[in-house]
Every structure is written in structure tokens, then in C-alpha cells.
Length: 256
View 1: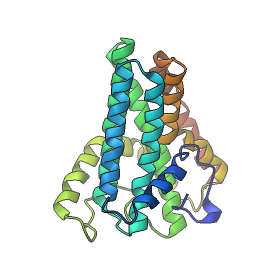
View 2: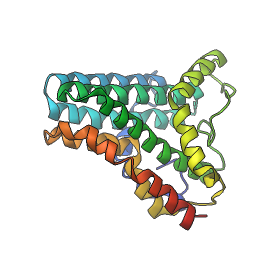
View 3: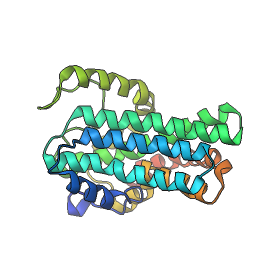
């Protein structure tokens, strides 16, 4: 967990792909591959997972979801190794995750032939869960390392492009980011806007929240696919949304 100081590191249940991500990033460090290429690669991997689901190869789809999670960890690692952080890569990563998450759940909806209202409820819940975890995690990262170069606690205005990227590209990707994530960011901020004033989140709290990280969400999806329980996926993510408010209440009462 290279984004945090040693004393701030916690057991991140969603970060199981980090070791593979570091391995892949180190393998690509002295090549012409860029972090953007790695982001595109995890997008392709996600699309292959969808094809595998549609063809009924659920174990293969589960493997590809876990592989996608590992590749997803590699783009940021590669950016740090090459010392080429970029807002373009940061927003493209988030945009791809949003689109793929919707496609994953849409595929499940199509295969299980359930009403589409459940798709939207489950997807809303999935994104809200991820936003809660990312909100607290980015606050911790900013406190831990003295300010992260591309992730901000509050994403409300277009950042200035970093060296090596075009401002126009940053502007476009940021607008897409706001379209996709703006509503979820506003909901979490409305529910717990004072969290940014917390000096440190306890490790146990962050570990508990990490079940809402994208990596663990994909792990749950992969596990249910491997167990041939695809019909439970939408219900599980819908039910997992209800403890979100409980997590916020715990934070407000016990962590100040």
C-alpha cells in the first residue's frame, strides 16, 4: 500500500491485486508502455469478462474480473515508477470503472432476466458504496502523505494539467468524471461533510470500509459467478447499501 505511510497502512480487503499490480508495473517500467495503456488493458479485460459471462463461462469470467482488479492496480503503480502522474490517467481510470461496473451489472440483469429497476438500484448502491470508501481513503491519503498529486478530497473544479498531459484532455475527462460521479460525491459529502476534518481514521475502521472498495466488490461478484450464484449478485449489492449510513454514524460518534 505505497500510497500511505507505514503507520497509516491497514488491511485493505479490496487491495488484493496490489502485488500483481506492482509486478506488472515493474515489468513495464522500462518499456514504452504508459499508465494509460495499462488502463486501456484493464478495460479490455473487463469486456472479455462480460463476453465470458454471456457465453456461460462463469469461472473464466470470475478469473477475468480478478485479473482486471490486478491490472487496475498497475496503472497507478506504473505512474509512480515512471514519475508520470496525470489527471488524465486518474479520471480515465474512474470513468472506465464506472462504465464497466454498469456493464457488469447490466450483463447479470440480462442473463438472470430480472426487472431493470433492480439493475439501477443495485448499480446506484454499488457506486455509493465505492464513493464512501474512496472519500475516507482519499482523506487518509492526503493526511498521510501531505497531499496526493492527482486525487482530491473535493472534486469540484477542473485541475491544472500536469507536465506531459494536455489541458484540453484533462478538461474533457474531468467533465465526464463529474457527470458520472458528481451525484454520488454530493450525497456522501451531504451525509458526512465534516469527515475531512478528522486527523486520522483508525485502521480497524478503514479495514471495515474496504469491503466497499472496488476490488472487494469485484471479488464478491467473481465469487458468486464461480459458485454459479449469478442470480444473487444484484440482491447482494443492493443489501450492502444499507450499512452505508451505519458506517457514517459510527464515524461521527467514535472518530473525530
